[in-house]
Length: 165
Image (cartoon, rainbow, N blue to C red):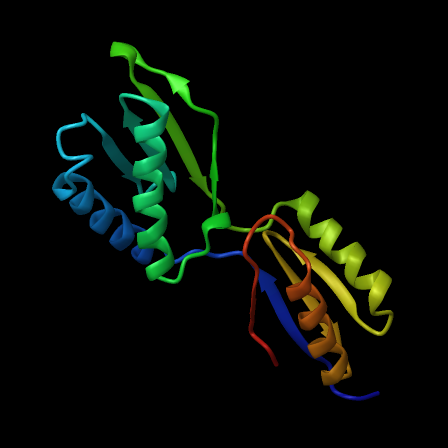
């Protein structure tokens, strides 16, 4: 039997790049004419990997999120890496919206990806290991075909392919 090759499917976000995008967005919100004295606030909790926006209205809240989104894109972070919740009414007639950063693949999504891989590529063996998915095969071409087919699908969060051996 030949040598086994493998790679890992993960969903990771660089926390330092998130923080840099947050700092740039916060600076722009303070300086931008239409947002300067609006009472908008943008916060980032590094421990929980969570953004929160406090704004006087839904419209201003969405503008703050758009500013943050533009900074995230410039830093190479995909926008579907953040799952935004529904706006909540806060004190003083303000609106609060939180966005959770997706880091890791949960069991449900990992099993869905694994099922898709097995259905399309019978010579490949996907293994769920915690918050990542390892794909093993003796054929390098089969592994490349798996990566290509996964890139064509949308699983609702960014996927990276690392440790290709």
